[in-house]
Length: 467
Ligand code: SF4
Ligand code: SF4
Image (tube, rainbow, N blue to C red; front, side):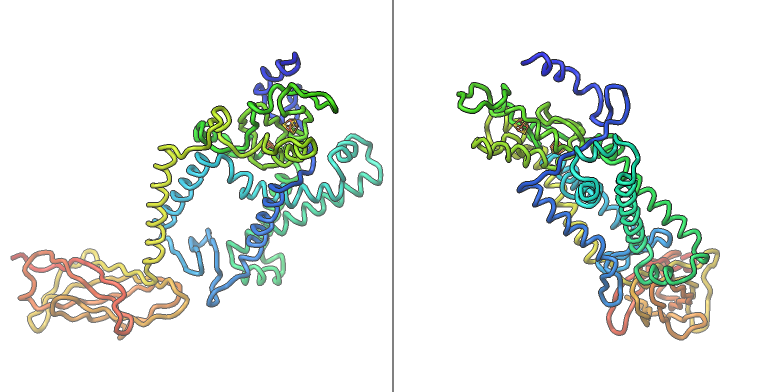
């Protein structure tokens, strides 16, 4: 190994790539990648962006397809309303999501970062292309930044930052549409600004936040702020697939010389893989926390290999074991265990969502009330029912005592009509013939009927005299 390579091998882990030797910010001027993997990621990114911006407009039966109304604690997913009472479904959903990410990381490394993370998608396929368009190639950008503030620089910087602010403003509005619903958002936009000062302030803060992240913070989000990136080391093992440099094939490195028989490995030290890296690292140093799995170095190296008529894949998706042993990747016990767990959680998720009730009833005796003996030799208890209607329609309901004789007498109303998307409260007396009450506290079943269809059975306690 040459002296400079030795020095680099000893020092490259001393600091993150975004920090220079003097401790200042190392601004990354990444070359524009092109090739098979970049194209796949680009198409996928366009799909994500289309889904993200179009989703708030999609409605099924007048209901938004997705809405996350945090202030009111109301969530709509696949046009179904989920209430705080359905929180356990969200909890299981979150656990499933986290295990899904962990499982994916164990098997496929940072596939999530490179292919689906919103930070990567927006940075690499929205904001960076604007920069290339307005300020030119990385070397032109570098020159522009180092140069004095003349009219050309002012115009370019104004256009770029103006577009960044505009897109950040649209992103902030889109997030708001997910929270309030598109109809409410359009209504607010049409009303005087003075009526929504609080909301407007929030929008401005989020716009500036997105702008700051994509205009200035950039790769630091991935290398320093994001906890997921920092957790990689505990999730990776030697069978984890990642973007890796095949050191067996590439080393020792050596410049390519025409008409000279090559005695070195396939790496020609062209540094193309470093120049395209959005986090400024050298993948040939091995797995690094800063690598977001963006595939740019694969495409850059493949292009070099093609030009030299070498086999592609000097940098490729591979595990450490695959490269060191030359054997194909294997599905180890940890991967199998995670897959099994994920399967169980997914089945549980589907079951919970599919069997989720649209009307949820809670019945309990009115606190502090004992039983009463009433006409006809009956015992009466007073009950409260809280009934949640999670649909967007009014629902007429009836309550019936199941499995024994008895009468339900509603207080005040003659019938129960649930208001849409609301909790209705009903108070009723339940009268049961004395001879049927054998204990101080008996468990009863009350059926909740929509027309002739029983939609729920609720258990409750009925208080009687001591026997
Ligand atoms: S692009 Fe390929 S050949 Fe060039 S330095 Fe990187 S690994 Fe070596
Ligand atoms: S090392 Fe390669 S895959 Fe990792 S961030 Fe840099 S260019 Fe992307």
